[in-house]
Figure 1 (tube, rainbow, N blue to C red):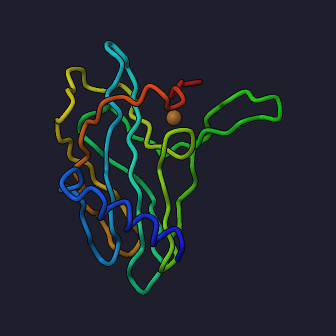
Figure 2: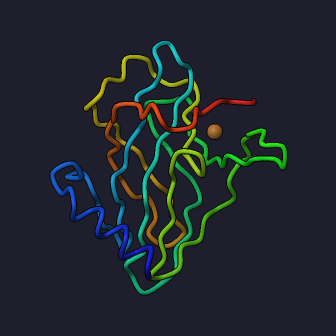
Length: 156
Ligand SMILES: [Cu+2]
């Protein structure tokens, strides 16, 4: 509940910036965004915080979007010697009152063979596929790249 309260506090702190939040079936999609891709990059990453404000658990099983050839759920992991690599994320179950965050340096939605020409402020339609809620349409906004965020590098 603590994390949910934090996510909501962040949301309330900047309502104008998060006008594209969506709530479907008790699932609250907070600040869905794509980090502005580096010029000429073939891949990029999308992030969103999902708060389950409903009464039943739900499981995110996949992501689709037309702005990339393929969208995959990934997680960045660090070995004991600090080397980062990416693994495919298994379906994510979010319990009622719980929050799951796709965020830089952790879980992310990997966009492979990304369309070129995405600009800051563009809105990109995504479909997030859940076991119970089904296909949920969420628009992701292209945000300026955060220079402090760890680089999203692709190993495969
Ligand atoms: Cu990745």
